[in-house]
Length: 279
Length: 303
Ligand SMILES: Nc1ncnc2c1ncn2[C@@H]1O[C@H](COP(=O)(O)OP(=O)(O)O)[C@@H](O)[C@H]1O
Ligand SMILES: [Mg+2]
Image (cartoon, rainbow over all chains, first blue to last red):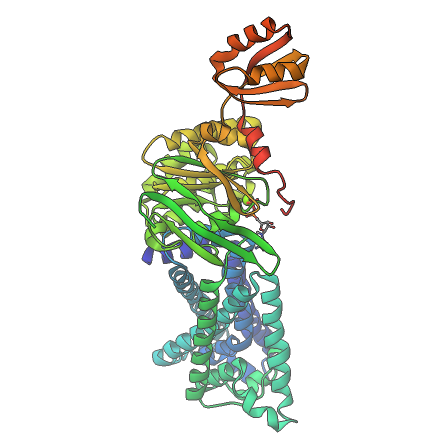
């Protein structure tokens, strides 16, 4: 099993799309979480917009970064998940893998483990980059450098990884069900943007939707990051990723996300094991 | 099922939907250490059968045993090297890195990679990415990957597809050499000359069923005598009356005689003595090609 995981990590590491997605994600974090708010603050002559200024300082590291995970990070690793399985259909490499020694489920397990490992830099690197930016800004502006507690950072890293893992797993499932990449990415983005996004936005008017929306991936993921100090206002104004409730408590959010990951994994594994590999 | 066969199928059937029967009650026996030719026209069901042997697809009905294991079982796969249909690898990895990935999966030491590449003469280009390979190089990498496990059973699905004549000849020599050992090889092909050159035994598949199985010589049947004589009808009667003649067939102005080839002189003498003009008498070697065309006549075009 270790050999199989090593093989998969090797493939993901050598693949350009892994690095491109990581690069986009880190750049988005640097630009939207640090560069823009800081430039806005400077343009306002350093006066009003104090709140924005506080966001880019070390003390807000966790909340400032974590707010990007439930939607933007999710969309990016959804693609990572789709590509990790969907491309195998396009290249025909699934048949090559399946005629090696391990059975299908072991190969599935190895690929998931490798994907989980590759998600670590998606969480880790953006926190390192955020730390560098916030520290530099604090130095330049002569502000205090107050880091969040180690325990909060650990929780944030864990929550961030978990949220990304759920989205990546959705991508894996869509790729396996559609036996490819294009449809899976289309459906995945459409689902998260249009279905979850629109229905969440509608709950203000149609309260009937609320119990349903509370079970959504985005609602659960946003609720989880709120638990770690992200403010509700911060996410109400984020373009396509905007979210203004309903929120659930952290325990329920964890439970729902956990249920998603289990369901996605079961459906994916079962489908991969049962289906003919022809072509 | 007994364990004297490396591959044994029993009424193996694969349907796609209502109308397509890709493999239809196939009974195939492949013995230890032989090079088995799986011969059939395009669309006959060769690839579908081979996919079932390695567990890529499941039979609709019937049974398969490969190396005494269920198809797709890890114990079996560890001893099988397979290249089924087009060779498929990661396009962004080099040939060598692709084999590295497979070696890790198969639990094979990486020291086997270099010899495998050398065996298929791909060492010089093994650092280039697979996406840049020519068809022939892809095919050879596929064979190298199949050899990586030093398998007891090698399954090669039309390995000379897409090769130029020189490449084909090379690949055939190579496969023939592979067969001369403890390894069993099953090779599918739609080219009878190929199978005739390489294989010990042949199974002919048509419309999803095996229509003949045997050694090349058994399938080819016996050489015959060909006689051109006038008047033909009288010649025919006369020859049929001779001792040791098994069969006489008139076709395209010739008589085709099944008999001991040493009878040629006696036939000639009898004809001349009977006042019949003999303009030609010679041994006619039957080819597998004729047999193959005969056996696969009526294969629907389904591919
Ligand atoms: N996945 C599939 N779905 C539908 N029909 C298929 C599929 N695979 C093969 N077939 C059909 O089954 C028949 C046998 O195909 P195949 O095994 O590829 O033949 P061969 O390898 O001998 O050329 C063909 O008629 C082919 O069109
Ligand atoms: Mg074929």
